[in-house]
Length: 243
Ligand code: PGA
Image (tube, rainbow, N blue to C red):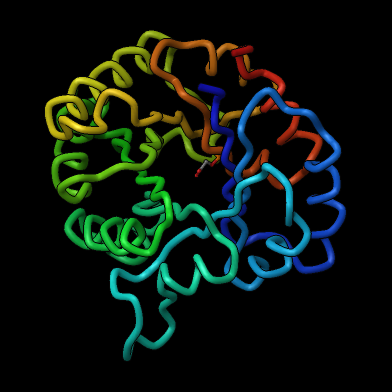
């Protein structure tokens, strides 16, 4: 299976950058599957600019319910209708800024799956939790409670302390964590657990992508800052192992 390289634009970008970015991605022949996750107001423009291409489109959040009186929220049904195939859920910035609980994330993931989207559920420990030797326990607990029964999608392991900091865990720590995540998924999800892709996220850049993407059980990357420039995003994708 080719690596998945997903770009999380967070609250960045603007309409006037969509055309050139989409064109650059369309012109490339990446070894990896690319997914772009811009802010909500850019989704429709991206859907048009990426039409008839292999490049995936994702949002950065959704509500658990398909419609209703939820001011400011966006449903997975509508995301699907405007052309999304994916949605990032439970990113640590949403867990921190919006107090999202594991149970809430599980509800959103169920809503996303019901609407036909592939959820990319994020998990990861804080620096204090890693220093206390609790990283794997924290992530196992997040998996147990933020994936609905019958979950099928993508997991992104993103240590909170590696996001936007230029720091990454050691190869040994990433390998150990991805093995622990795989074991938990197999136990928790008899149907899909063995094949769910596990992405690594946190300060993935063109110069470290190849070594990170070569690690066992690393099925791709969730890229923040370095996804904003098409050239950097494509350079990261070029680091994916050949299939
Ligand atoms: P970063 O962000 O690549 O800027 O560290 C990753 C993420 O938050 O998804």
